Image (cartoon, rainbow, N blue to C red):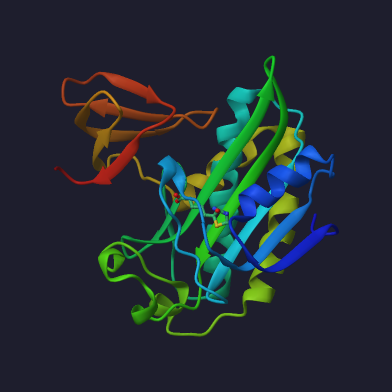
Length: 247
Ligand code: BTN
């Protein structure tokens, strides 16, 4: 991984660059990094603020032999890798908000965008986008986001090496990914649980259709979230937005 690394000063979105490279037949493990994205993409068609030199804006091309339903497990795996690397390098303890946000002190430092190209129930390729707010000061975070976004620097009060952090992520990703391919998600699950939701936490869940209060039961072997509603019914979720507490 990272042997085929493309570094750009500025792109619209590293996701788009990797989609193009994938269509040109570039191999598994191709990595695209940019100092700045002018049209960084978040989940649910949101924008992802990607100021120059302040963060890690990176997309990885994967050509996994997995079934499409397993692609979300790659997101959970990646969140685990990011949490481990950050915890190793500082005294801050990141928290994974299922499925893909990394929080520190309840504010977001990182997001993952997994885009899959599949045909006839076979994955053609996956573009795994990783965005980490690294060296922003409070003043670099857009005002409207300051209540919910932060950076590693703000939380750890130390300057981070972007270069080194990228290297560590790629190394740890490769290791974890290989284990996952060999042994399945069961290898990743306990690590996810170290940084992820704890059993018994109270949350509000919203999907396109409804919003309800629930207590978290855990994650399933396949990465789905299990939550119990106030009536005691346990539901298995593959996609939803989760918020802490009631409301
Ligand atoms: C989210 O939490 O909504 C996901 C954010 C993903 C952002 C990263 S930055 C690198 C890659 N390129 C993009 O345009 N988006 C992802």
